[in-house]
Image 1 (cartoon, rainbow, N blue to C red):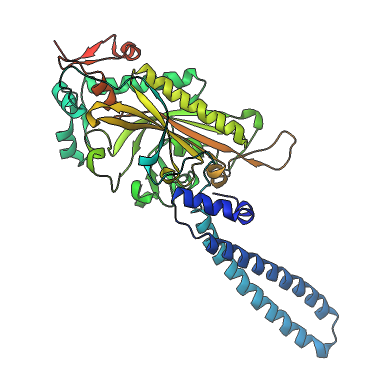
Image 2: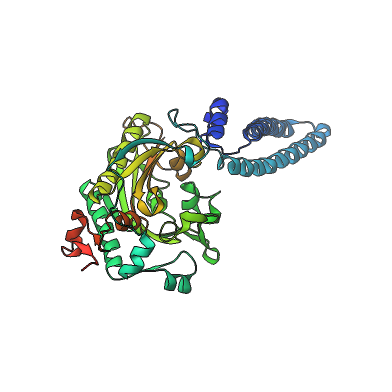
Length: 424
């Protein structure tokens, strides 16, 4: 959420931000409603002052004048009550509009309509070239007996699966490596709830607008999260933090759930886009300092790049264009790993910074050292690893001519020294 005063003083910046993000928003309506609300507030203040004056006059008025003054007081009360009711309605409408205002993206965010126009920042490793006919992860997983799509779909519907034996152990190894990597970086490991109230979904920017992608438990007014970003960022909601605590760095490994409404085509094949997955997420809550936020953004990106390199996976980092940014993101970098079965790169990580967009909704603040007025924090988050999607490049990139899959060195300690899955 943006500060209403900021919107009022920078309408052209907000309007340009919505255009760059390709997010339709009626800014003129918001500004007109804000203006009308302030006019009504002024009128109610005038009426209240007149009521006070009239009350004093009634007390000292002659009997013959008192009836007219009392009638005038009643008229003032009726008008003031009607205006106060109108103000309540307007405040609700204005709040609903404010929840839809897109955060203006950083100036360096590239122009573009969608993910096809994201810009490559860097690459690491060389895309795989095989001297045999490679298989995709679906064929490899079924051949090795480590993934069962048929029974997953039969039991839970499309885009569901079972990981079996070494498939489940491989996933566990990847997740444990990711958690260990982040704990060594100084992040505090958390085990948060994954069923949350609407306040957390609204506070992190997933509602309104993302309801179609969420699994919602209507009877309990709770939602299953699509990322632990939601409970981690909401952890200090409504609190005023000591600046000496900042930055706060949290990491969690949780199950995640997304309906993936509207997804179709190659992006839904196999393990690429599923309804239930496990993700290690890093969240940072820090001071309201744009330079610091930008530097921290690159730090959390580096954390994930280091992990992908441990997995020996070729990847690229892309600067996400305006049209592919979400409502609250100031800037986002995606890591895309090489996936031979797709014949290209596929997104595996997203690193975002939000400035005060989420924290303002969550009333997440800190009090400056001088004891002044509380300041809204900045928030950032990034995928450390998400499975089973990361298993796609792990299986495909490391497959061998004999049908086995080589285990990267960094994972072997978590698999009892196992060097490969399958083969003779």
